Image 1 (cartoon, rainbow, N blue to C red):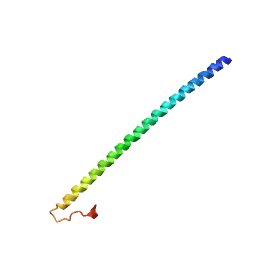
Image 2: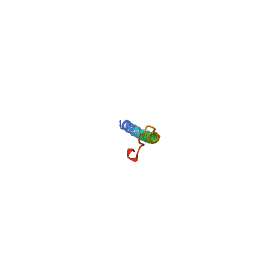
Image 3: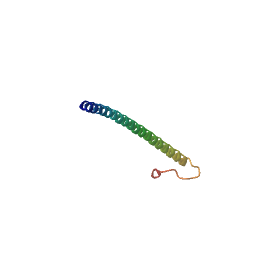
Image 4: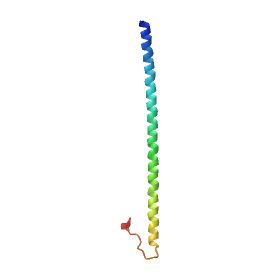
Length: 82
């Protein structure tokens, strides 16, 4: 009886050690996936921000140049309009 209990306990300890090492691997994989997702979404966000900023600047330049060329007597854009 005592031998069986010892074998059962040893099997439990070995399986627990195996499960703990598996948990560490899963945790590390989750961390890697999470950090990669965070970094990718940050880069997408920064790229989108930069594109929108450039579109805004280009639009402002076009509107300003149209105002300067306006033949109908409209006043060109001033510094206060920016």
